[in-house]
Amino acid sequence: MQSNLDVISDGAEVIRAFLTAVPTFWSQNDVGQVIRACFDLGERGKFKNTGSSLIKIIAKRVPSKTIFLTLAEMWPSVRQSQQVCCQLISR
Image (cartoon, rainbow, N blue to C red):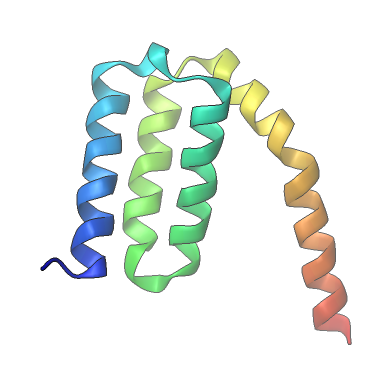
């Protein structure tokens, strides 16, 4: 039976291979889900390098238009999360 670490590493490797092989096949929604997963991985110390690696591949391989549209769509939720976090810290 594989550990959680192995499953996450194997899953990231599959995503990395797909991003490398067919970077233009990825939709805005797909790229957004991978970026969110990378943020989640970055919050867990063990997987920070895995998330960073996937973000670098997205930046190098995925068309700029897809990246910009994805980030523009994600921005309001990221901004809202940041505000909630700041409110919790200031209490």
